[in-house]
Length: 165
Image (cartoon, rainbow, N blue to C red; front, side, top):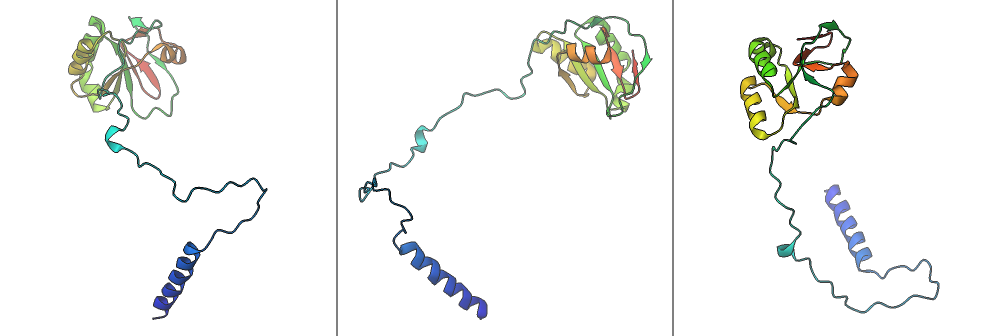
């Protein structure tokens, strides 16, 4: 019962404050009276701004990496403790496709993520994704990766402690 009384008191206070005249804190003498009714037209939602249709899941192609080419990779030890899942780097070339097919089971077992560093069009990317049989494969420019990991060739598998072909 006490809660109901408090609610009624609060409603009474706020309703009288909402209907009272505004309090003038400062008047420099330059105040202009506003017209009684200001005509504000409501927004026309029928003619709202329409953004152009952007296709979803469109890969940025072509992806070309100047620092990486198909070729042999010498296995070596690295220290990348933040790399939770192995990453493989391939391109659209015969060596990469053969390597991908040959290493598919270990890549799947380790849930490796694929990076395609040289691919020109959607058809080539689609063929690489089909060869990867469900593994995630995304086109990414590889020049920065090549510099950081001192790579010049691919296909390659990179784990937290090893680079190997």
